[in-house]
Image 1: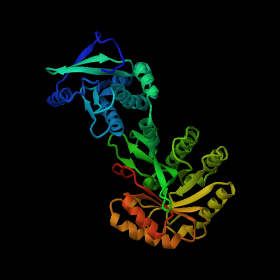
Image 2 (image 1 turned 120 degrees about the vertical axis):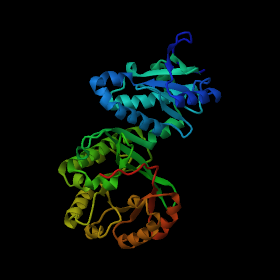
Image 3 (image 1 turned 135 degrees about the horizontal axis):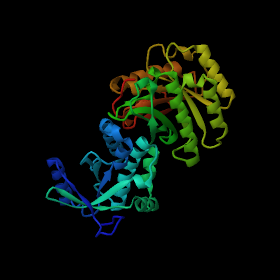
Image 4 (image 1 turned 45 degrees about the vertical axis):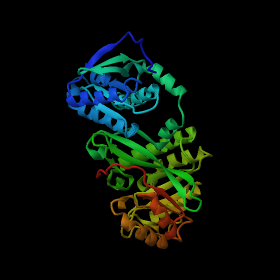
Length: 402
């Protein structure tokens, strides 16, 4: 069946199905051949349960939510993730070879271990291959996680590269959010030249995702967060950019959205300049966000001038709100970015907002970018308004108010 593990004679204890829905699901997986080709795995949260001890009863729903969120992120529309017990999940991959599906199941489990245990040890990875399902029981063969990982590394191709390039996540705690389990997520958002229709840069778009609900706090809502939280997010963005330059994870140059509060501090500027000075390729662009009508124009102008003297390319990023351009009067950034993601629920307003904005900022910078367009259908309107570059909103989940 293409599985990698123990000899077929050595079987794990069968999993008893107590849910009628689960029995129906496994009947379908038997009928469509997914089980026969090794496309169905069961992963276990045993090590998380053991490590949490007395906290397991209170935290198990959070753990389940974390695994289901990871599965939703990695699995395709035709794939399946089903909880069988308090620690067992079935993961079925609809196509491809067995080893690819097993590696995918391990990746989902590994993210949960890293989140709750702080590491992913091979000995904590519990995975079995489903070999048969009948009469309310699932027969399984144990698999060797290390062998799966070795085989998967040897077969990595363009799909795994695209997965790495789509986003990056890490555990995160927001002091502003009452200690909920969160993850800091950096989306790789391509920036397109409207003249050539080619991707010419990548913006690392940070957001914070609630583990339980899967909903997110987008960058435009970060103004509601505390300064320490903003610094923690921006520091992670800078650290991730440093890694991305070394590993060439996305198309260069890299655009880093960083809060005005961060760059106004000496530690924030020092960390940015350290990154820029240590990188010859790809080029780093700082996009100053968290601006509002109350931002002091003199302070913003001084910051931009200081960064440009340090050989930092500087964009200024604003959202569509009244008087938001007031602080930009005396600025000379390299580029201006209009973030229309806040208008995602009002797409009809976007062409009018773009046209009005472009007319008022044309004199401020040679690069005029609009980001967060709901679909590629808006690219023509952006070019007509006078923008030079744009990015289309990638698949977003619901916004969580900060």
